[in-house]
Image (cartoon, rainbow, N blue to C red; front, side, top):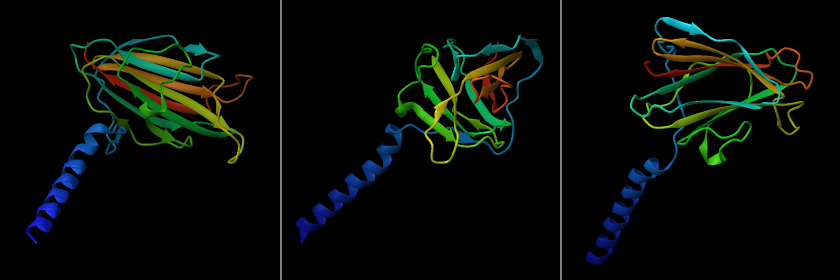
Length: 190
C-alpha cells in the first residue's frame, strides 16, 4: 500500500513538472490585442513607397539590442480575385535573403483571408529579431497555395517607432498591389 502511494505521488509530481515546463519550451504565437492600436507618437518622416516585383514576403527587423522593441501587426483588408493567406514568422536572428523564410517552427500566426483583423502583438524583446510577413494566394479552396508575385511597402517613421504599410499582389501582371494589405509597427524609441 505504501509503495503504491509513493508511485502515485511520484507520477503526480512528474505530471505537474511536465505541465509547468512544457509552455517554456514551446513557441508562443502573437497575442491578439483588446482592440487598442500601438501608440507611435509624433510623425518624424515619411519615406518613398518601395515596390519589389519579385518579392513574395517582407521582413522587418531591429539590430538595436540596447532598447527593447515590440512588433504589432494587423490585416486591414484587400481587394483580391483569389483566396489570400498571411503567415507571420519571428526569428531570433538577422534578416535572411529576399524570399527565404525561416523554418516552419518559427511560424507564429497564419491568417487565411484578407478580412480586417484586430491588432496582434508580440512580447517585448531586447535582442536582434527579424519578423517575416509572407503573402500567399490560391485560385480555389482545393488548390495549393502559391507565393505572392510582388510586394509594395510604405515606411513611416514616428517618435516611438516605424509603421509599414505592406501590400501583396496575387497576379503576375502586378496590376494593383492591393490584394492583401497589412500594417506592421515596430515600437522602439529613437
